[in-house]
Every structure is written in C-alpha cells, then in structure tokens.
Amino acid sequence: MTGSLMTDIRYLAPHTLDEAVSAYADAAGAARILAGGTDLLVQMRSGMISPGLILDIKKISELTEISETPEGGFRVGAAVSGAVLAEHPTFGKVWPGVLEALNLIGSTQIQGRASAGGNLCNGSPAGDSVPAMIAAGATVTVQGPGGRRDIPVEAVPVGPGRTNLAPGEILVSFTLPPRAPGSSDAYLRMIPRTEMDIAVVGCGVNLSMKDGVCTAARVALGAVAPTVVLVEDAAKALIGSKLDDAALEAAATACRAACHPIDDKRGTIVYRTKVAGVLLKRTAGIAADRAGRS
Amino acid sequence: MAKLHVSTTVNGEPSEFLCEASDTMLDVLRGPLGLTGSKEGCATGDCGACSVTLDGRLVCACLMLAVEADGAEIETIEGMSQGEKLHPLQQKFLELAALQCGICTPGMLVAAKSLLEQNMNPTETEVRYWLAGNLCRCTGYDKIVHAVLDTAAEMREAAR
Image 1 (cartoon, helix red, strand yellow):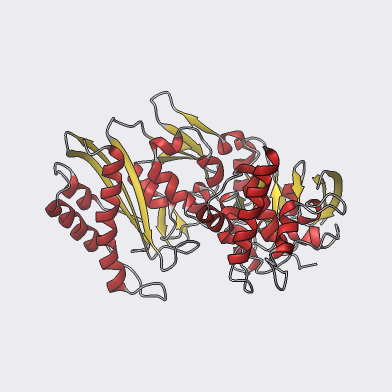
Image 2 (cartoon, chains in turn blue, cyan):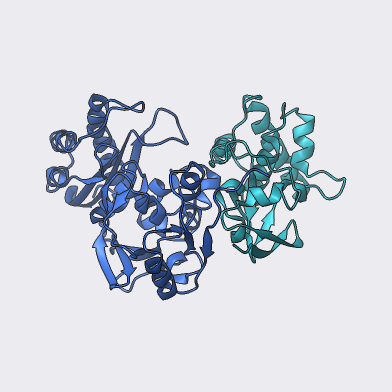
C-alpha cells in the first residue's frame, strides 16, 4: 500500500453540468474539480490542498466533446485531453499553435489525461496552452449558480494559482473563432532541456497574412509575469508590416517591455526578458510560414 | 465514511474492489488487487514506473483515482504476457539486456506496447519522445530504444 492521499474526501461524477454546478456551489470552496488530475493529485499528495469533495467532470458530455461551431470555429470541452485533441481530424490543421502548445505539456502519459481547462484553471503563469489560447483569441464558457457567461481566456488568470472564476463557477469549454484564409498560429517555449520541462518563457503568435502583409495578429507571453499576458503593442507592431526585420524588432521590443518576470532557478529576470523578444521573432516566423506568407 | 465500490476490468478480467475516494489506481493495484508489477517511483507523474492503460490510453496510475476505473478497462504489466509466453517486447528486452535494476521496466514495457499499438514503424526520435515520461537511471536508454525499434521491426515482419 502506497498510502492514501487523504481521508474523508467525497467523490462525485455527475452526468449533467447542472448537477455539477449545484454540487460545486454547495461545497462552498471545499470542492476541487477533477479533469485529468495531473495537477490536482500532485497538489493533494503534497498536502498543498485537502478538498472535501472531488468533482469529476469527465462524465459530462459537453466538457469532453470537440465540435465545430456553426460559424466555422471550434468548441473544445474543458476536460478534453491533449491526446484526444491531437487525434481530431481537423483541429490541428486549423490551430496548429494551440495544439502544439497543449501537446508540449508533460509526457505521453500526462497527455492522456491533462486538459487545456485544467492548464488554465491551475493558474500557472507558465502553463503552455494558455499563451496559445490567448493568441488564438479563444473565449471560455463558464457556468455557475448565476448562469452562463463567456469571457476571453486572458480575463481568466489573475495571479499564480488564482483565476477570475466566481465561487461555484465551472469552466465548460473553449471557443476558438473561425479562421480567415491565410491565417495560422504557433507556440514556442524556451526550456533548458528538449522535453518534459516547465517554460522559462512561452510565446504564442496568431496572425493573418494577405499579399505578404500581416493583416491581423495576437501575441501572448507566458512565464514572464504573474499571469500570462496579451501583448497588444507587439501585435500592433506586426500588423500592417511584411514581418520585416524592423517590424519584428519593434514587436520584440514590445514583448520585452511586457515582461515583469521573477528570478528563479529556471531563469533570471534579464534572461527571461531577452528570450521573450527572441521567441517572438521565431514564433511569428513559424506562424507566418504556416499561413503561407501570402 | 463508507468506502466506494468499484466495478472494473483489469487485464480482461472483471474486477471489483472497495476504495477511498482519495486512493489512487496505483494504491489499489499494488494493495487490494495484489498487482505489484506497476511500481511507485515518484507518485507525481514524472517517472512513468506506474504506467498502465485506461481504456486503451497510456496514463500514470499514480495520477488517476481508483474510483475512476469504475466501468473502465485497465491494462497493467501483468496482462502483457500470455501465460508463460512473453510479449515480443518483453522477449527483446531480455535478449538485448534493456534493463538493469528493473524498476522502470514494467512502465517502459507498457508504454512501449502502447506506442507499437498505434505506430508499428516508429522512428528512433518517436520512440525517444514517446518514452520521455519513463525514467531509467541505469541503462542510459540506448538499449531500451534499440529493443523497442528491433521489436517493431520483427513485429512488422511477422505481420507481413
């Protein structure tokens, strides 16, 4: 016996969102949502949290489905695992940056369980899927005792481990907008190893190209501030340009200016700030190549 | 608090057990079910020594609640050989000495089997990335990777 995590914990796996919201609200802060569990079980084991109720949301179809919206976008259930999203026939072709960001998290085993919803709600500034989702212009649907609301992904995190979700609110799904022709996205992170590490800096870029000119762009950075940040000045520097060196340098400067990182064993403030600019240039290049640069 | 009753399938056989809500699948496999082939290395999903499949998908048993097995199918290292007949991966690991202390081996084998079930012809890079979540402190990985590649080649030949 390897020892149980905790005693006197209840487990519920409701089949409807209404039941889940009701149970979550009734637990008044003592409950934790279980999607893939790759953060939750580690936090329970370390004694960081001791929930009174574990609410497994994977039996609710809306939270585990991937569908195309009538407008031509995608809706991805909050509990869809990285492996399942990777197996979708078209998602990765339309949103390669979002998919590569989610698929960078952990090992094959982790990919079998970990979800974009969990990555967002865990609230880490270094969560890989979050900059990519913000760059994509994704919104999330949340449902709580007061009903449903849609908010941009960038409005969810408020600090390390903290989100804007109100008490009793559950993250239901991500909605990714329809794509204009000549659009693509990319995500790169800097880690000292080649795999299985936490981002020192992460960068998501989503852009549209027409006749060699960037017509729309969104840029987000991870691990350089208390939350993932949308860098609007970097997008402005790209839009209207041919992604020439001057435009990329201006965008990189905006990225460096958006950095308010910590010094830790993974990287210093100076290093993270410098790398943010480097990653912007590389990531924008990949996104533009995928978009066809035309 | 009353224990939870779980009905599941382990290595093709119906199985029932009682558990606490907080028990991990690994706790129950190694405890009540007596299947000690899955190892606890880190208990935080970093080492892969507890790799099993849940409805065909590779996961860490330490990062899964036992109660989540209800109605699901679990495959462990104990289900890999058919009686005395070793799985080709197990045979190849022995032939190529792709193990030393053996703690990581069950997880390596379960993970490698899962790879070959979806990709019969992986490149070395694909093998290395697929097994990146399975840590081995003895072998330096080369023999493990070669064993997986050799097994894949033999299984492809056998399937022709």
